[in-house]
Length: 218
Image 1: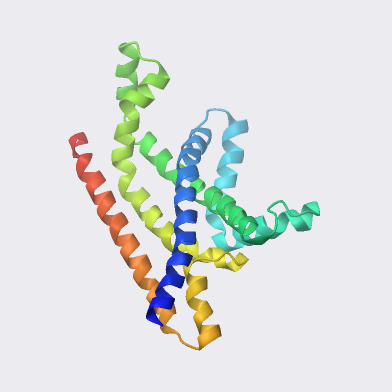
Image 2 (image 1 turned 135 degrees about the vertical axis):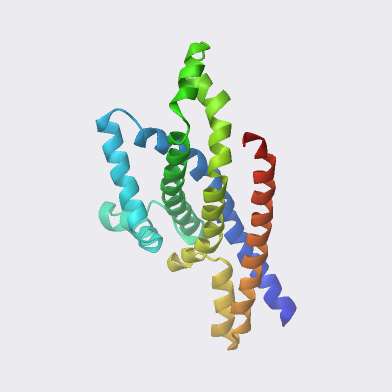
């Protein structure tokens, strides 16, 4: 029985891992782009973006999942995501990417604005363009400063993937709960916690290593 449960949970964890990895892959660069928009001098660009960030950060991720999954069918009269597990995964991925991109954008914005204006002025004196200044001087310092808050968000993402079950996406919690319904046993549900703990522990070690590598920015 233990082997059967473990294999089933591993299958569910692969779904969790796929959602986690793709969310990070798309939300980090999107968050950087959104942060530029939220700092734009153009009111027409800045105000709508900050409003969207406020809405996303101020409403539950579970609500966003439900709206994104069911919304197109209700408001547009057709399902944009398709049927089956693939459609549920796409809807969950879009919801997670939008949500975490908004959170990451605020972290990026805080990191960028924490750099003193003197560094921009010095770079201008040296003849560097704004793009060269950002990528050659500012970005690495920003990365150093945002690693701790980003690591917190990444570990939170590991646990938030369990919310995808609200639209029947088959992740590890779904698999653990299935044994309660089919076999009347609850320990597989607690067993899922070991997967989260191990994965979160590995991420904590990885971010600790990254922070040490960036110590030369002291």
